[in-house]
Image 1 (tube, rainbow, N blue to C red):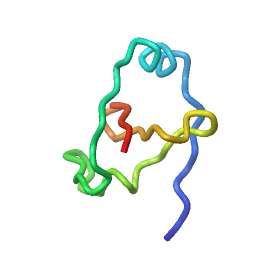
Image 2: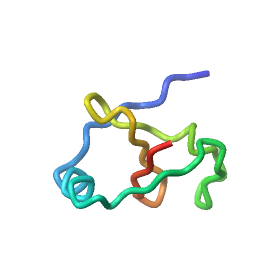
Image 3: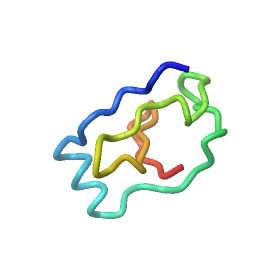
Image 4: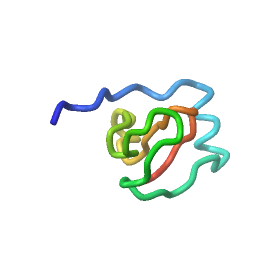
Length: 62
């Protein structure tokens, strides 16, 4: 399995995280935009590696 990219959060994404604009989801959920599992989407670099970014820009904790 190829490694997922590990993007650094943008200033906008950091503000959203600080505001609590994220939610929990199962990694086996299928993305409505690309059809891949949430597990297959990129997650943030440290120290936010526990958050994943899905296609519509939502930030989720798997």
